[in-house]
Length: 425
Image (cartoon, rainbow, N blue to C red; front, top):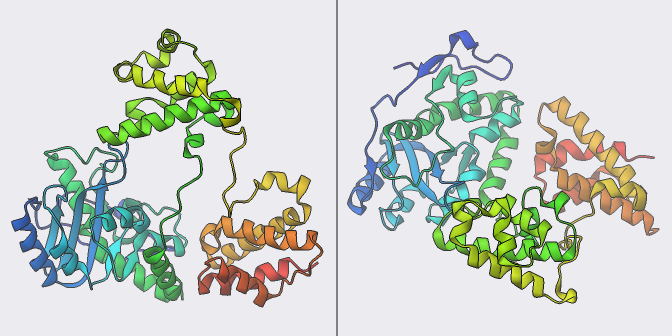
């Protein structure tokens, strides 16, 4: 079995493509799935007796099932081996959670897996995110396969990330892919950690990892039905928006009941077609080509009741044509120049300062300072000026504002001086 490159590749000197070799199977063979409480107990004991960090990954059934539940959990630890755990059949994961409560977790794009793992009762006390590390190092390609190729010189088996992981039994090729997802994470972490330290970015990384580990879930969006693909340009009148809302809500309820992704219960195109056409009868609804599919016909009575409710709503109960703004939401920046000129001017300066500084330190600008924080800073400063209030733009003041927005110390240190200088009139 091929071994990782020694020395490993770096951002400036990645492993050359002609030196990359295939890594088709787990070096210790494909582990059996852990799918009973008894076997899970054994796995928990073996993991607890291992050494060092634990490589962690999870597979979901996005696009097939309702929600983002994990249908497979992959773990690997030195001295213990690799484990593929079926969380659906293993029962409570209490003993596994205890075994994982202590060692550092290594994940790639941790923010994608932390929520579904937390739903199983699995939470990290310390985290290393290999994708985030690659971004901080200025890597152009940050997918797991690309980072492993450039760093370790190994090419993993074919990607099955978009598969329906709720399928049972899981095909062997999928299990190989799943096992390989954690096979090399420990070696990869060691290489990236060394490069971060050499670049003077190890403390930046530690702060980002802790932020990802501890940040709360995003609040639910207002009127999520308005985000139906292509609805914004097609559905404009209040009555049409009401039809879209009622159909979307009814579809969500049925999708949750059936545990299927909503678009497989009724297509987005069907929602938009009905909202635009505003059919006045069930016959006219079923005449729409978007309602001719088997999945649409199966529940046509439900869809018609939803449309009927929208058609019967009094005018004063129809949704507004403009989406309501959340308490911390800002107008779209494209409108600022007309109505909030001071904020628009400051946004140009803030964005330019962040972009230039990000190029200097070789970090993506959205990682140096989140776009939402750039907008909020510019807006607050601009509105204070519009209101006739004195608006300080010293490095200390900018730093305090960024800290209040949740910026990490390294971001404040790197961004605040550049932003303050750019805001000097």
